[in-house]
Length: 99
Image 1 (cartoon, rainbow, N blue to C red):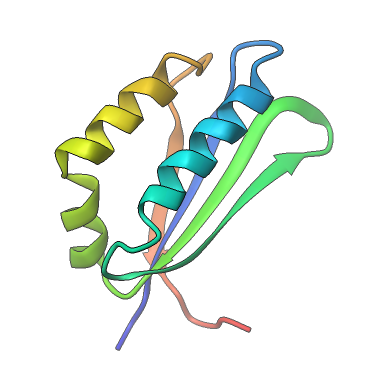
Image 2: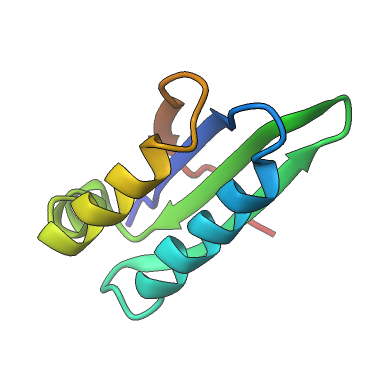
């Protein structure tokens, strides 16, 4: 079985990175029991105080898509968008190695 990966970059409005981190923690924690979410990381960027890198690992693209289309996830996403300086940038792929 091939796992599905999501990598995203989010840039908060100036000085609001910590708020974005809290919103991401809340949103992803709510997904903690979501079928198919294997793990995730929320990463700060050393040379950019307002940017985060997010990585999620899912059992499949179908599992990811099912969860992200829920009304609860859409509501959390709207809250996150209010804190962002620009739309998030995402890349999707298949996991070829996980240690």
